[in-house]
Image 1 (cartoon, protein in one colour):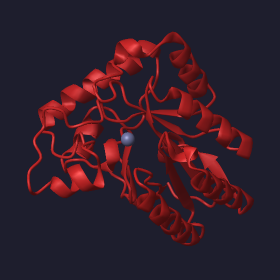
Image 2 (cartoon, rainbow, N blue to C red):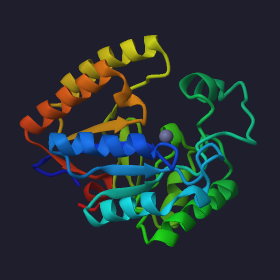
Image 3 (cartoon, protein in one colour):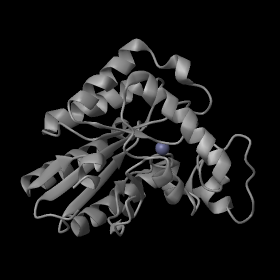
Image 4 (cartoon, helix red, strand yellow):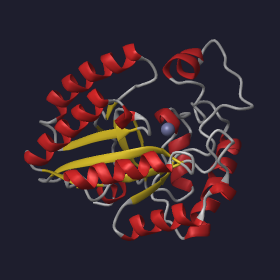
Length: 248
Ligand SMILES: [Zn+2]
């Protein structure tokens, strides 16, 4: 998997009918910077509100066109929430503080995980999309999940800190740049953290940047992301996708 080329993988999280306007603006923003491919993470029934029936023709054909152009469409959970699941003292940090009750696959038993993934895959099948990868909401997944994903035919998954090929090759340590915008203090901390993280990962062969639908709404964050991406491209990073990278 590693190679002489420096690779840049941008991933757009939480794509669903309700976020499509933001995602589509992010795709334009990236294109304007010269980034013509990335991984697009789809949530089939976001918060149980934007179910498969809401995936309209316009959105689906736009996504099919992206796939044809080399973009990677990724299954990103099913509902991206914890409806029907209990928070225990043990998982409280991850379910309430680190995320806002979005860690859908954190402790889902294997059979339930499999049936949600199968439901998600129906959306992909309906539209002829190839699901190469599965990425759990907030990158939080139960330890049995990678083996299940391999059995279900996926080629890769990842966590915030590593890329996991599912064919038995070792994981590739690589922390993604990622912003938290839920509160002003989180945005300020994110700017400092990502500036620091970029100064480290720009020396690596692989750089990852994960965007969430509201990230570009904040001017200081938008400016920093543009600046980081321009610098990375200038330093020779080539835009690619998780699917392409995992297939090398
Ligand atoms: Zn997500």
